[in-house]
Image (cartoon, rainbow, N blue to C red; front, side):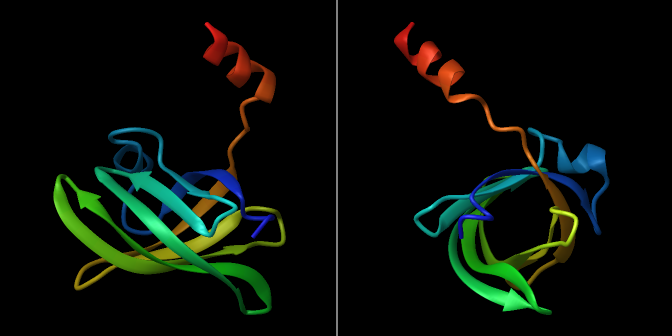
Length: 121
């Protein structure tokens, strides 16, 4: 899961344009070392339970998720795979609802020095 770990910026989705994706905050998906993660786009936020796998010969993570969409409880599944150019391709499914492909690029991590300096203030 190491190659996936960290925050990724969702830059495009099949069903929604960039303004919609970034409605509440910049769209993102992030993966943690402990096989969990979270994502946010439009007014949707989700928390994921991830498992490693392969898809079309590429490393991927498959996940189940639950969260909220404008305050309503929602859940679903999805996957994310590393592309040859280092970007992330995936699809998020809402149970009994829409599904959309997405593309994401690795977000610039905040330097550890800045994070620790801010906590001391």
